[in-house]
Image (cartoon, rainbow, N blue to C red; front, side, top):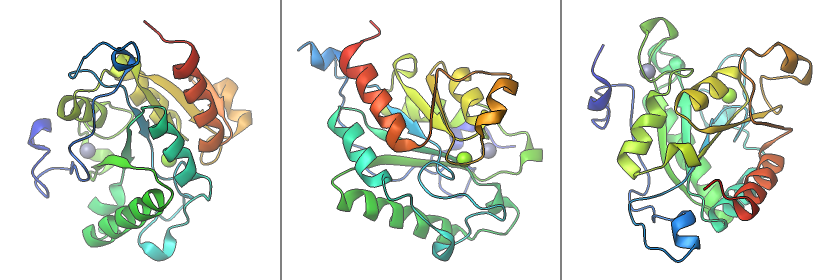
Length: 224
Ligand SMILES: [Mg+2]
Ligand SMILES: [Zn+2]
């Protein structure tokens, strides 16, 4: 297993960062008029089941991609609330040979275009391309991708939110010290909530509803 911080070399490890590296530093400090350029809060989104419909046999190519219609506008709303958005996605289908790297990136471009057409922006995409059995530090429920994003972008994880549709997203978010929101748009079902070992801070039906919660959280009740 390669060390986690070789991650920025595309194709060398499971990580690849892409997108706009110049995400502005915005956070509560700037709300108060205090210049804290080294500080940024963020919203981390799982991809499958959050941005687009998931599939049992992996979202393998553009033909499999069905972006939820409310997602571009939700991301625009988060950005307007000074919340940069990052995608944090397990894609072991790559290691299994079921997803070609070019298709993974074509899906990323399509999501990016849809979001930008609505006036939103995704700052970067992070993928774990390893097998579950690889025991890598990046595959959720481990927090490696969140830690990497925080390091690269100067994100305050304790003032950030992880949104996902699986318990592994909640576990990764908590392990990184983030708030967590579980969506019922994908894997998690309402009847499963009582059985979760790790409870999210909030449950929402989809990203649109989660956006209401996150914007109200940061608009009205700053944590510190
Ligand atoms: Mg998911
Ligand atoms: Zn990995």
